[in-house]
Length: 286
Image 1 (spheres, rainbow, N blue to C red):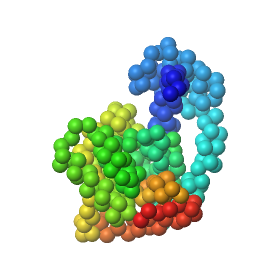
Image 2: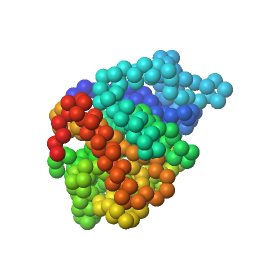
Image 3: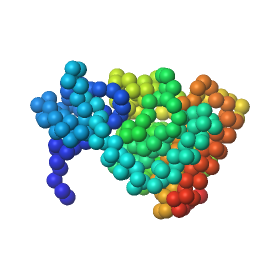
């Protein structure tokens, strides 16, 4: 196994932190605090990343933001990930037709990474932009594990640590429901998760997810006569190997949504994800 390179790991951590808050600037002290890094070591990393164009430094505020060199890197990465390019027109059409935001994400090294977005973010809405990362911790990520076997589902649930058997059974039921109907439904959850998704620096996303009242998030059964405050509706895009290559998600819901509308919007989302699956020669295991 190759030896770890601490400087590389710290540089990646800096870029990931700034990517989670696009449009914001962080000072050296703020980055050092959030990543628990030594300021002297961090100063050298920030200088090197700025010199390469991966970061830009505001000399007056002495703060840092993502730099222009990452645009070329991102474009090159997307050009090699055909599912994203195929999904874009479908995402644009859904965003316009449903008046919602649509995001595409995938799993990379155990994290959910946002790779594309369609629609216009609303004031006080959820801030999710390409490059942002979310922890693959229940209840997040159900779409990515629902079509897997117990060898992947159980470790996903296990990331919660010590939980009751009733909680473990509920997550198994939630995953079974996603697989049976073909899409996931996440409820608005509690205020802490929303604040983290909206870019509040008060706590990290991982802290918010771990503190989430999970029994109030993953919707198992949909009552067509009830109304729901939704966080997302998500559907999988399958790759040629039959595994989930991409997740498409509707977000940006305004106010309560009737259950019958949840089903209608989910049907439109699934049609789009199925079209992308077919276009990339994916194999739908269903």
